[in-house]
Image 1 (cartoon, rainbow, N blue to C red):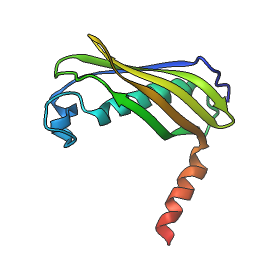
Image 2: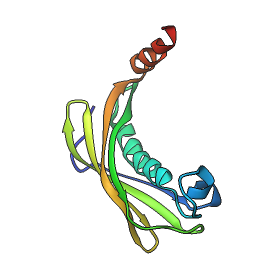
Image 3: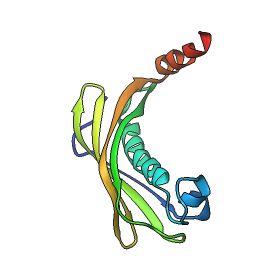
Image 4: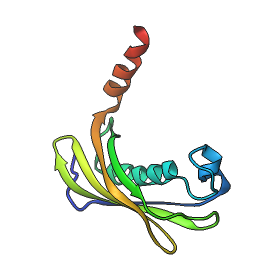
Length: 130
């Protein structure tokens, strides 16, 4: 694992009727849904790590503290940016920000842990065994 402070990521999408608050049941207005903004932030962080992981490794989100500060209507492009601010063993902390074509729409922090995919899935699956 060769993850360093300053590593950046980016993810983008268009606001469509499918990713609005009304479509997913998180609000009553047809604007970009907060859960989708959060997923975009996580995607920016997640994908930035991929080239720096060893075979069999992955990452999982473990903490997110964000504010969604501005609404975005259907038809606008939105994107999220992530920057690694701290690496402590397997824990990686990011500053995350989201934007639309008019400016910032959200910001906060996100933590991910580097995991061994097979071991992680095996532990999760063991919950089914009682």
